[in-house]
Length: 226
Image (cartoon, rainbow, N blue to C red; front, side):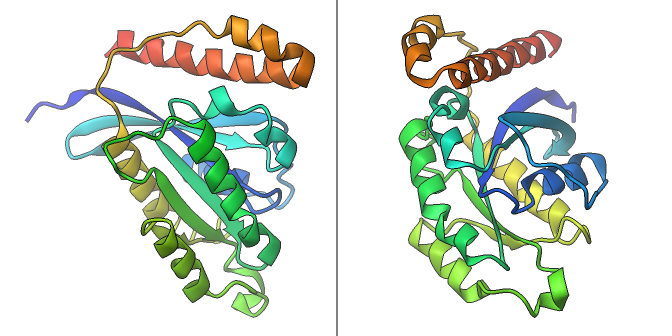
């Protein structure tokens, strides 16, 4: 059977600072890990090509700054995401406790009307630390939280040991593919909104504009290639 055309899927990774979002992405896409990994400023992305059920897929995985200030400028950045990955550190209860804020913020600002399928996946990272003796968030508590949000898929991972990373991102890819909308690319004018908000959020507004514009350009390029 002939392969279908390549599909570009946008995945947003959210969570508190220091939970290992960048390390998980680098482990999955680049197969590398560094203890000296620096925190993300603003946002960055990596891509990963894979095949799912005879369909070529390119995951565009966006790494985000894990600070509340980032939430103030990310409405257009969230828009168009096919899956939202929430990450917390099993050894830090605060990173788990703030998941509600990231979850609700994405629902509020993102376009989540995706055929009734939940666009979320939860990753409990850093299970390798101290052999699991220092963890403060029990697996049972995390699964209970997932159930309260509509049975969100849950994986416990270690970016350092490459534990469960591929399985988690395969689930992410399948979730994103299920949520992917079969529609033409439409570049909506965002300059007026950006200019209107510039006085309110300053340079962060231009980051939002640039990240959104770049995403739209990448979508168009992939459409022309396929």
